[in-house]
Length: 379
Image (cartoon, rainbow, N blue to C red; front, side, top):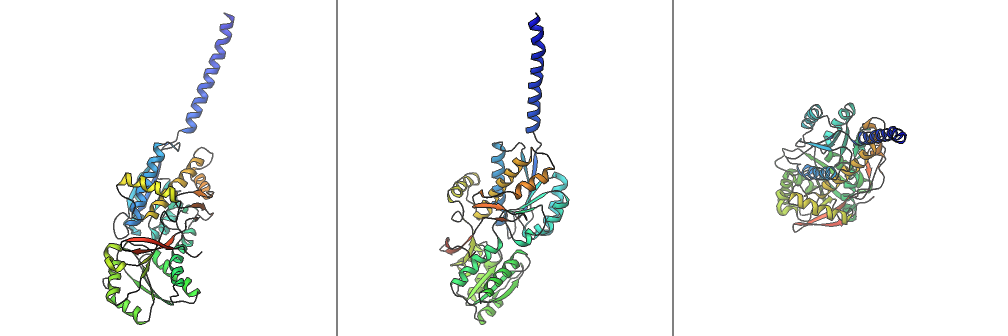
């Protein structure tokens, strides 16, 4: 009897202790859902920048949630801004008001500048998984750029122009988009630095006839032509051929492919495919993407960068959720400390200004309905 009376309090204490540890463990590992926003183009002339990017983010978050990689489920809210900055801002405000996201992915270049101050005020991390350059990196500490560098895009084009010993380059760029004028300026600087001559021509989305511009380019003896824009350049390419220009074009993307028809043949363009990244991982990803969405991404790099961005974010969240301090401060610190992340796009490191290194694109050529790699960009 004495033994039983002595043992009972001990068992009760042990039971209470076990219950306390279990409760403590559950409390430590249980977190409310985190909301992730996405704002980018799903319709309009620049929709290709957004479609595969968003599909990949959906796919990545679904995998993370299913495998319970994080102690908090992740919820995605996506908005189509049609690559319109004013619409981006209104969608951002609505998203924040209704869903209170902790992180927002943005895919519209100009909008990133406008959203940066809002995100800092609202204590939201802003991730651009499409663009990465010095102008964006100067914004603020809440902006992270997990993407190829704009300067590498320009050097992919200028490197080939210099190798081909072209001396007179005409650059036609879309003036209503902040991104294309920046690329035009980089190309001009890089070519003039090596002794080349550059003439700039701008156009707007509603331009219907490009022939007069190309006749001017032809008359001044241009031997290389850089076209910087989106789907509307299909008409520009056809107008150039009608103006008697036979040289191949250089461009930043192939969004104009269908509208350009045969005029696009032998066009040199910036791209990032599995050939530029981790080939085995990229190929596995492409198989999984096709199984889920019924086709491969039209722009592989928008998908690869999205996949890497989500997983770099997941690593930062995993380190941030169970430590002391404000969550946004923890996420910011752990994102910035990312070094040599082995992604689809290569070994990615983030810098203190939010920019990233490690994604190196190349130059490709469109021949007979297919693209083939031409060369690496100059460093």
